[in-house]
Amino acid sequence: MRYTAKKLAQLSGVSVRTLHWYDKIGLLKPASYGEENGYRYYDRKQLLALQHILFFRELGFKLKDIAEALSSDNFDQISALRAHQEQLETKIERFRQLIKTIKRTITDLEGGKKMEDKQLYQGFYDWAENQTATAYGLVNTNDVQYKQSDAEQIVMKNLKKVDTTSWSKADWDKHAKQGQDIYAAVTRCLEKNLKPKDAEVQKIVATHYTYTKSFHDLKPGVYEALAELYRTHKAFKSQLDAHSKKLPEFMSEAMLQYAKSMK
Image (cartoon, rainbow, N blue to C red; front, top):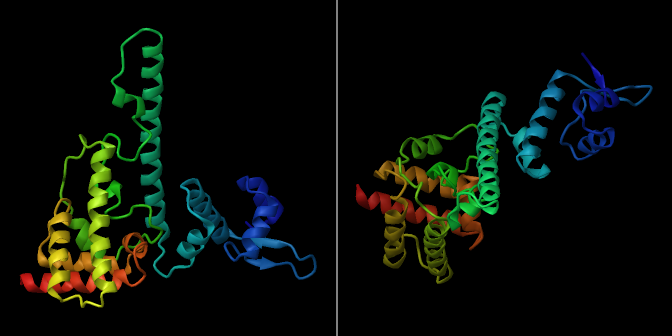
């Protein structure tokens, strides 16, 4: 069935004005335009694309990132839907935790069972109960590129099953800071015009290797795959770009040099 912008707005709950805006910015182009009336017409393909857009928006993505995802050669609809499902189920679980926190707080304030101080904030942080290495972002499950590369598959298959349920936010912050300190140290080497294979750089990378072993089974091939992600994967690159736009390439090469030395 073919829909005009008005009919699609009624069907989806998205305003006609928003559909016009999506067309203007290239996010959702109609299947065709009426030659005489200029109406926008949408087919099944556009309806499915709009569903993806709404899921992405629900999960907090920016329109620019949504456009990049939908236009990517690697975009796979079924994989994307499964990822949407997983992320929404995670949100549902978080909301359930927040509801428990509300109920416990009410009981406490009404003179019932007292809450521990740390229970006051359960559900407000991603690090709350049942946190995992993957959810923490070592591999970013919110990344819009759902079709995994060979390197990402290798890294994912070699994630360790680490029990982090007892970790507090302070524990996660400490772990994250260790990583940022390593990136900052490598950036200083880059700024001194050192080469990835230089001893000073390799010494820092050795620290990085030990650091990443917390969550990865780092056989040489796995560390090489991780090096590839630092250079090409949006979630990994973003951590390094904050220090220097040159750091992803430099860090990746330094890690490959280190992996080579272990063989």
